[in-house]
Length: 563
Image 1 (cartoon, rainbow, N blue to C red):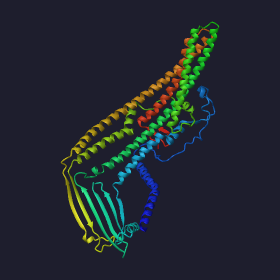
Image 2: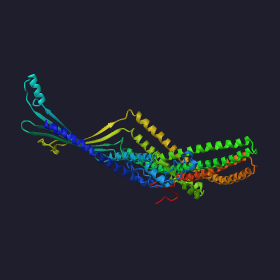
Image 3: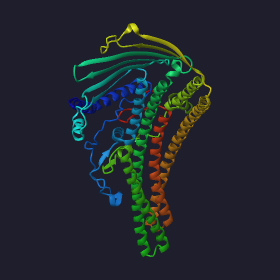
């Protein structure tokens, strides 16, 4: 029974060693996957090197400025932002590119694509396999058998025990031309443990070579799956790079949208205060008999509506701020506010559009858009699959070479007799009398090629229209800004005149209501046009393919790629 104990202990040790080496397997997978990504990164302009998927960074907001002010325009949430961390746009981008769950998911997709490629590459390297087994045999001398003999009175039989064991070591190498080379060394031996100790063994070495001559012949056919895996990783790199650009634009867009909601709440509060001052004055005039109840009621209704708009704008602001926290990877309980100075900065940059003609912008987009290159490459992929599907309908004709080396004449373990080796060569032929599935696959490949070609043409047209549309939106935002500047000036004069006439008792209530509401709306729309134009410019550079995003999410835009 000692041998069984040794076997059990060996098994336990094997399990422990396997657990200890799991980290080594993880490191090995990471090294190969990251190396595959790095090997193709130079082919994708703007690709980042920071794609580590298991890097968990603690969210730390301690380094940011703290807000100590209460904001009356937030009504019952006036004190809610005391102690909040103030985030600039660059800080928000940096946090998002470190902690965003959506960004992490995109990195994992890229990693898994690279991990898949490592196996396709591995298939064309020599692979080894080792197996072994042992059987422990015993008879009447075993304690259990002896006890049974004592109980039953059975006559004792001859005793003995033995171990039968065997091992097999093999190697296989797939050739990119379709062939395969295999070697296998097998050892079988029996050790008798009773009486005189003797060892008997047999060995054999078998080598084979197989090469398709018709079906599955050639590098282009055999390595199609490897080539597609290589290209799939390239496509994923392009998608990831495009995502980074869109993600940075989205962060900026949502950042400015939150500030817009905040400015809207502030403007509505200012409008409400102005309405309430007018209402108090008109109520005083009513008490003096200078205003009718109907006239004052009109102003009262306007104040109620303005109060409702103010309350709704606070809710929208707080909701957008909460959503923004989740977008950049913060926790729901984290307290932040966005920096109002960012709105000043984009206002100071002006409303100038990119110095490009529309035709030039469209041409640049056709040359730089990564997703368009992917659509074109997929047309080539579908063309290759046509050749593969056509090859699958050919007859199978395989060349087989085999060499078998028996064990030595003395039966010594590991000894081989090469003088008595046996060699053979042959051809295997398979005529495809039933190739309906292959026929259908071929026809499907033709249809897929036509569909891929249409997808490419459609994608090219959509890119052109995207650039044209964003160009129009920039023009619209710029014109809206000009109009709102004028509108703001007009409504400021209207309010001023309405107030003067009202103080003299000559004003009209409706003029006071309309001018104040229009002034509030003009202030909000002016901020909106600034935000819309700034976001449209970012989307323009993204859609033209000339927005480059660095590792912390900050971008550079323009004709020349940053060094």
